[in-house]
Image (cartoon, rainbow, N blue to C red; front, side, top):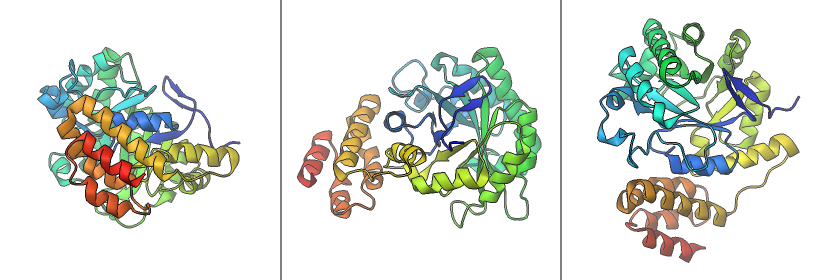
Length: 333
């Protein structure tokens, strides 16, 4: 049986199992569009505050171009909006407001380890309070049924809060009982943050115990990593996070490996061209000046590991206009 296979998430049928994870500050709709072109079958917005969205703050205005965080990318056929929050009512209200965007799924963040998220009882703090996690999942499912056309609700969790409270199965079970249609597991604890090594055996265990698809995440940096996770854990799908940053080509490369048994690294010129397209699309969404500032960190990701990458980054971090970026990259190309 091929490791590249369709996935059914509730009513949503996907033709493949290579997903793009939500990554704060990186998975804007421009980048998601590039990943979709390269074979990301399903992608997730960066985490969106349910509290802020329910108050309709300026960053989340739903009827204008400023809704960059939650709008579908130009080339995205299927995407999910990820919400984070510690209160079920805020999650419910925020989810209802997404109706006009017609997302294909709604995802709940129960894994973010960042302090400013956790201190409000959201993200991985929900792993310490499974009952509240269940209430939030139920609220999202209810909002989907009432306002979003009953699109599937999914959830992304960690292994637990720390090594003494490994409770991923309990949290996943409660979420599924509340109506969640897919569980993504990043098998690190909140205490680990992004350090140490993720424990893929937790993904295998969860896959064997749930009756909904399980998606694996954690330490996926190459096509071979994705292949190995699918083989070792039996998970339905894999989700690239840090491994995809600056490298949308990891999807086409992984697809090639799973189908043909081999893949070719992306060319320097292709990555720079992708970075410039990313910048231009981002500028159309949030304005040239802001986009150029945002792209400084993105350019660092696009050029990581490249010959002459350090020299290019040194120039790019000072660029303030698209024309300056063009001149810099033209010199290197």
